Image (cartoon, rainbow, N blue to C red):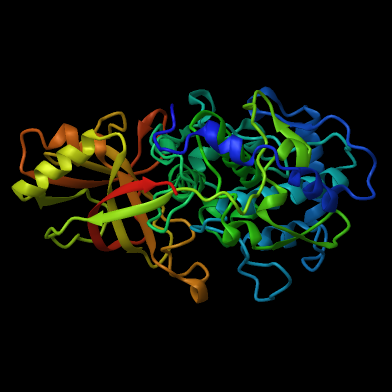
Length: 470
């Protein structure tokens, strides 16, 4: 897929590709260590089995880490608490995960890197590397079988029972990252960047689909499969860069300059920023099995990219009923002049039109995902291949009042609707937004679990966005 914007990938590499910052950034990580061997290879979990050294060593390390006190930075409890915890203590770096921020991808890369080193040390396996769960592959939408083995420390009983017994799987809509990768921009204030959209779909859908501890930001990292899930999220960041023209904000001092604290295998605190993890193979010494080949990036204050210019359409939107167990459809009358403008914008590859939802919240984890459609009529059947399918409303982290209540903020969703507009507005003066509650697939069929908490949507709008480059 070619980059749609004026600043293409070739120009980007010409601007920042020759910097020597990479070598300097490696020093804090590897100073005093033996010369680096070939990069560790993070393997697809589908290429492994229960007897593979990667699985045996992981289970061994989990057992050892779980036996350590929660005050030990290399313990299972402490490492999980860095992401989020319900424990009342407030130790260094606890509850510091970045969700629904511009540091989502970069923070989690740092987090996984130091976790991987701790597991390598605890397992006594110097060749260990973190596998990834490639749930984006149609053949890997079931929970990996070694995590369903009740005799293993990789098993958790409180996951969705059908995910644990092998009859449940993620749907194609759950793992669809096309909406996130439809832009080459990393992050925008309107939550329309790849990093922004990806956090909801597919990332949040996988958390909710697995269920149990994985469904809450405060407990997710206690599930051993969490780290494989995020290894795949990290791999897909590289896919976005390599195959979709993705441009990281290497000239944004806000993004590059913020420091995050983690712990090495000796329990010592380590500070890192985004400049130190841009090139995983060169700086962190790992690659992904069959992963994309990437040109090196470097932070450059001279590089400025991608200023979004947004235009909201003055329209009257009816109130949205709470999202619950039943499908909700909301008709939106489109004035003739705005209809023509929307059709013209939707046809223009340089323009992106979004359905934006703001003030989205629930009292607790709803436990379901709402497939969202935009069409000329209400949608009654699940069809994520339809042009009217625009994305999913899924709450993980933000938007849930009982998750980190002191840091609560409502969720925001931005669904690109160019294709849906062209399909729906040709012969219609009304757009219908449909929210359809769905669970995971069970024996290949959509399930409809009871919603654990209704979801409120405070505001809906349609906005056009143009990306300008300096």
